[in-house]
Image (cartoon, rainbow, N blue to C red; front, side, top):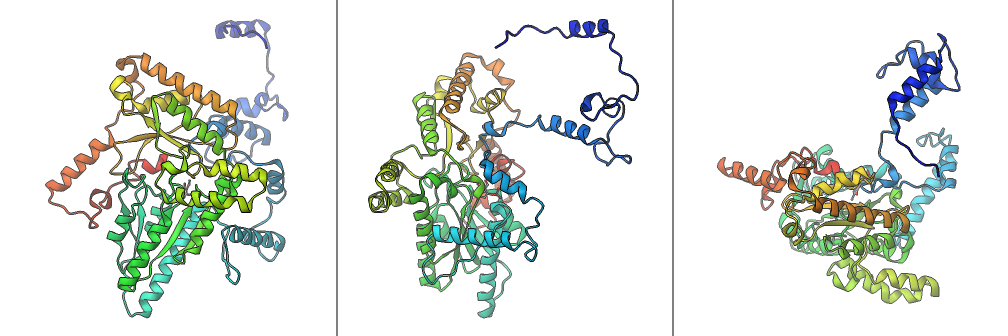
Length: 504
Ligand SMILES: Cc1ncc(COP(=O)(O)O)c(C=O)c1O
């Protein structure tokens, strides 16, 4: 490796002047776009097509340079979307880029492959002999969620009309941790969103007890999430289903479930038995009418995620809110009970080698490889001048993109840092990440409050803001929009607050 040295720009400029290099007018080369007359002497408008066009490689170079301003996808640990695609998959995609997916007549082979994919998923998710599974490729999980929601609304409308009842006030339930696509469904398709507060007791997820309190004859369905975006917890599909069974027994009202498995389902390609049994189990519940999953989140490294969680907790500064690194029996979640059951039946279904792997996986609380962590309770007492939000920009300076954001409303006094561990997080990269987090934390602890204040966002804490809003509401003598939902069901500007902008 060559030795680096200090570079003085003044020296470089005077050296170039001494060389007396002159560029003749109108010089142009398609091979070196930076030296073309076009690149150096004419403006290319940014927001209009230039009337006389522009050289392709000049435009390419300009766009490429601008795109370099983006973060590095591999170090963007905020994103759930895969940043790695196998060469063969890329090749197939590039080879077929020119085909129009909507043109069934001209491209029957592509349509047939798409149908086979639906069938493959249906089998993985436990379709029973005699059952006919229906599915559709969509542009991401958002569209699939909207289709599932729309189907629930249509079923509800048909039932109501058949009973001679009005269809004016449909509502749908979801936890306040729901990804923005779920809330968008309610807005776009004119359904009242009953956003249920989350709590530590409900793992910051949908609380089945609140589901019971907020359903009525106008409820078209409940969105239940496998793999909450905040902490990766699985919401209890089976418990919600039982509550809806009880409601139907007492009122005759039949309410469906749509399972949002966008971030939680496709991860377990390396631990297939657990995931697909969990999904299949959900589909066995007659109330689960639809599930969405995102293939873009298919590669992951659960082992690295567990190591990261354990390393962070070993520092004594951080505690993890996600719990995929905890032993299955430590958690009281339904998912872990299912994992236990699966563990005991794994032997019959796997070979000796994969059986060993399966047992290792099943020993842990299941979930997507997401590590949500925060300072321990004692950290602020020992280093009161360090704010957790400053960890994120300092890691950004080392190129890691790790967001720090507040938990959903009602719990927004707690902030979390979140890492989505994808397949590219090998042990070397993981080692670097842990080292950087440790060094950044040490730097913060070693600096004083005045220096660190520069790194803090000039904003009030969400919890202070919420208290003020609640006070304002009380002063006005106003009531919550939806009974039992208090501040959360009110006109809280969640998207304006930026919660969902950073949670995706
Ligand atoms: C739980 C959950 N639901 C829905 C979505 C939306 O999925 P997509 O970005 O594929 O539209 C996401 C995205 O991360 C998610 O995590």
